[in-house]
Image (cartoon, rainbow, N blue to C red; front, side):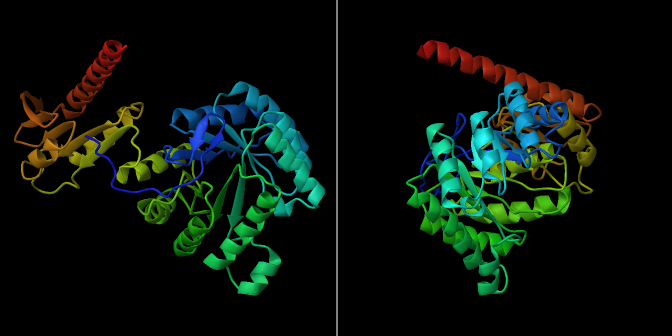
Length: 372
């Protein structure tokens, strides 16, 4: 039972990365970035497919050289998810990947040289309707801005971002989104808050270089959660020193926790205590692993005792309330005659969940046919 989020989102302009809408109330897109050598086409395609299978809407690929640009052309032909080409400094690479079908260019216009070079990239993007992502990072601010502020501050990140934004505005190009990432939560949040008041374009959220899987996930959840709860953000990446697939999973978990976007099972589970009638921790570990393929939004509560079990079950699609030997099963808030054997909880609950989803899908198909 996934109720609507109370969050009121910031109004922003709509752009498209490939066929994925960004901004103006569109679902917040979740993306990641490959960490393979782009010139290794086979490995990069395999990783893109894995990221897409995890639920990604968009994938970013680093294109640091002309050889990588040629590889990008092959990669683009072998995948069907929108690709952002990540480029720094060399405008010729931007022109090449635009020719090869990039769905977005991640390039800061102020860093690619002369006005003629910037104009060439903007003209190519305009001709092919390719958006640009301006990406400001607290760790790579322009020297004069570093000297002005002494250290990265929200105001410094904002000034850097607006420097690039104003270049595009001067060239009458408004098909862009902006990020102001930092590894410090308060620095990033402060910068995004300032930027959100200055422009109407979509904002790409991220706490950059957040860390390893556990610490990075926590830091990202705190930082992105603060912004998302204020309605700020149109697309996001969780930056982890981990498998990019994990970035997608954590991204959706953050959105799911704020009731912004749901994908897969939303598990409600107790931390377990001496009241538990079955091993909750082991049960959850097995269920999460077995049901990783489920993408339909379903809420499942797994509570080890009768104290909180029935209450959580009443607000879940499926709920399990622990009891001696056989635990109570709830579906759509109603207690079922069927009870779950505590020695076979994982097998039986998996079956119940998959049956519930199959029945739900069938009912939706029938409803569609009736409407038609």
